[in-house]
Length: 326
Image (cartoon, rainbow, N blue to C red; front, side, top):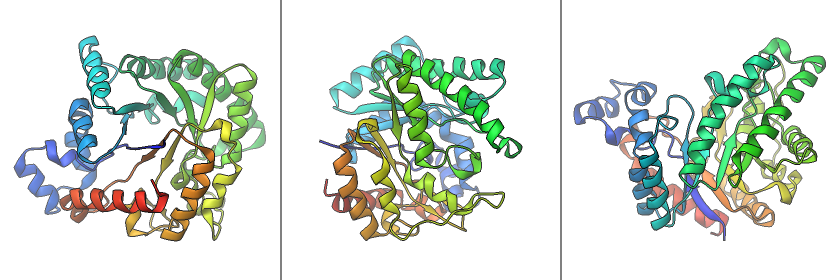
């Protein structure tokens, strides 16, 4: 059975804010980026409430977001034990998305001292993942400045990344370790064939590594900077056919609206390349890959969507389950 989960992103941050702040956000006096600054850490910290919300939404999985800022490295042993116990009692499986901004983006750094610091940081979040009983951890493959986007540099970047991934996968133990394709604005590792190659290199070293294909991230190729934009095919779901089944455990599902630079819009609104017919075909392809979990990463993009967040999430879930036949 494929489990359906969510990374809650910004959807319910407003619920933990004071009523007067909440009203200002819904009225547009405070923007959504500021909303996150005011409440995202508090929202992330209350994992038990996230589990409760997942049960209300008939989800079977949640992904905890360890990108900065987050409270997870500092979580006490008691807090970790409570999360593990509560998730188990409620039949909610967990994954942890490792940090990808700040120091976390240095896992592919060609400067070995910097790369080691990034690995050291990610191990803190993997330790948290293991302590809360997470089944999976997921990591972006780092970033690189535009002036390193050349064959000689890429050879060095790839060697650094493979070193980091192999070490972290070993450290993750029973948590299945994934690398996820980047957005094009990170300049590296957007295309699935590049991540398939990385996973293959790590497996040759004996590391148990999987590929988390994020189709919405792949759509950002349409807006790649530096004259490197690539078209999105008419049937974009077919990109999933190139992924080896043996590399799949967890998948991210979201959309992207080219030219508007809109990440993770609600899927049922069909604003990006994943129209209904495409999502139905995506579901057929993905079932052949037999992932254990599909994680939705929808984010509210407007004050109206924040106001109508419960309806948005409910309508999207019905739509996704119908399209994927789950």
